[in-house]
Structures are given as structure tokens and as C-alpha cells.
Length: 359
Ligand code: IPM
Ligand code: MG
Image 1 (tube, protein in one colour):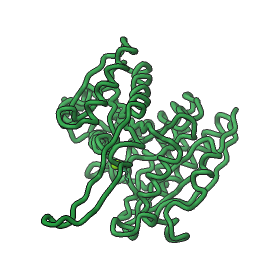
Image 2 (image 1 turned 90 degrees about the horizontal axis):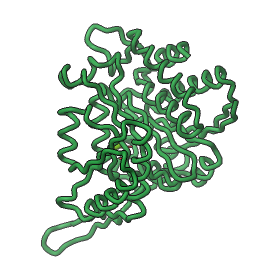
Image 3 (image 1 turned 45 degrees about the vertical axis):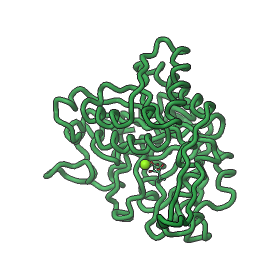
Image 4 (image 1 turned 90 degrees about the vertical axis):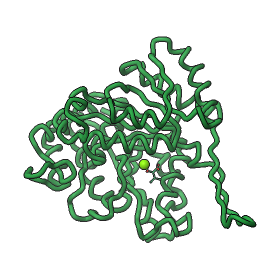
């Protein structure tokens, strides 16, 4: 019977639609388990640029820090594309809020939901072995936040650099997160790097080896990023916790999500040492289907389940949400992204209603 305050960033594109469904689920869980939950709306992304001229208005981080958790739909708007000044681009806001809240660990949970084995693009015999991968992505370091430069050369035209830097401290705190998670799961950690080429990866590996000694129960492996990409489609059932740096994690988590059948299914939690966690689907704002009631709200709803589990320490509520989602899928309800030819397709709002009814 707790009391929780959630900052809500609806964002751009399909963001507002999927967030609406997630809010319905939160309210339903609040009723059923007798929690008092309040919401604070926060503008961020392309919609904020429309309103205020900047995608990350002053005070955004402070408002979020005053809450117990942050729910984010999606940001991204082609109107404010890569050619625009940084302060107008939605992605700038996303990186800034991650950094300002110190959200160094991004947990992306890729599971093959039982009712959707058919949606998995891998061969049946591979899919049948199942997949339950917790991808642990470092979120506020590496090439995403390194120094960038653009300059004229005398003979090669313009040249640019993006610096990838990692410190022992940054590697150790994400590594520890991965080992701690593994202890609560199947006790396996696969640490992904490119140590045959990159110095940052060699440091990464040595810090991980040090940590592995502290967790003798955990079955630990080093695995190169290119091999990981291949192993994920060859046999994803071999992985439990996969820990990696920022950009490798960005790429591998999209690959993992597609194996689950749709980008529309994968939730994520971004957590730091102290600040409120941020919960968002791993997919983007999908401007092409925005406002048409076609989006799949499941990734956002499952992100809410992660919020209850990781930020509020309420695993029972989290399990109830997951069960409600699984029941909707088992009963055959499908949004367009996960429907097979001939299956009846429902919209975003109806999927939300069905999941709420299951609660
Ligand atoms: C993600 C997204 C972002 C990232 C983009 C939108 C900056 O792809 O959350 O995975 O690369 O982190
Ligand atoms: Mg990404």
C-alpha cells in the first residue's frame, strides 16, 4: 500500500498512444493492489522543440528527480532530424536525461513469449529452445558521450572523430550490475567486447575478469561482439545475462528484440545508483503509424512491469502485469506488428483495454 509519483514523458510519434495504455494499466494495478499513484507530465523530445524551441527544456531532470520513477513513451521526430542543431533534436534530450539521472545501466529483457513462438523469425527447432536474455547495456559512457570533432584536412576533405572512452569505474559498476542480476537468474554472464581490436575492450575484459572472481558461482564467458551477433541467431537459448558497452548494446538489443517477434514487445529499465529509474520500450516513435491506433503498447506495458519490480520493489504487481499480457497473447489478440496473415488485428487502445481487463 505504497504511494508513488511517476514522471510521464509521452514524447513523439506513437509515444502518447502507447503511454495512454500504460497509464491505464498502472491505474488498474494501483486499484487492485491499493497503491496511491500520481503522475506528473513532462515535455521532452520533438514536441518540446515545437513548444519551447528546445527538446530538453530546463528543469526536466529536476522534475524527474522529484519523482519515484520515470515512464517514457518514445522520442524522435523527422521534423527535427540530424541536420538540425543539437538542442532541437529529440535524441539529444534522450541522451541528456540518461546522463543527468546517472542511468548507467540499461536492462533490456528479450524473452520469447510462449504464445508468440510463431512470430519468431528463427527456425522452429531453434525457437522451441526458448530465449530469455537480459541484455545489460552501459548507457552513459563510451562513444555516445565521447568528444566529437569535425575539421578540414588539407588533402582528404572534412574529417570527423567520435571518441570512445571507458574508465575502470564505469566498467566495474555496469559489470557488478550484470553479475548481481545473474545471481538472481541462471547465473551466467556473457561479457561482449572487441578485445581483439579495441583498447577500451581490453580494459573492459580485465575489469570483468576481476569481478568474475568475486562471483565464483557465476559461469562467465568473454565473447566478441561479431560472434555474439551470430550466436544470437544461431542459438539464443545459450545466453542468460549479456553485458556490454553502450553502442554494442544498442545494436545487439535491436537484434535480440527482433528474435522475440517484434520490436513492439521489448521493455527496458534504465537504472542508476540513486536517481529514479527510467522505463521505456526499446522501440522508437514510429512516426509513420503515429495517431492511427496501430501501435503495439505491449513493450511500454511490460516496461511498467519492470518499474514495479525494480523501482518500487513490488514483484507481485510486476508478475500480474506480465501475466495479463501473456493472457492477451494466449487468447489470440494481436496488433498489426505481431499478426500473421489472416489473423484479426486489433488497435493499440483495444490491446490496452484487454490487458487491463485481464488485471
Ligand atoms: C535506443 C535508441 C537510442 C540509442 C537513440 C534514439 C539515440 O536507439 O534507445 O536504443 O541509440 O540509445
Ligand atoms: Mg537503439
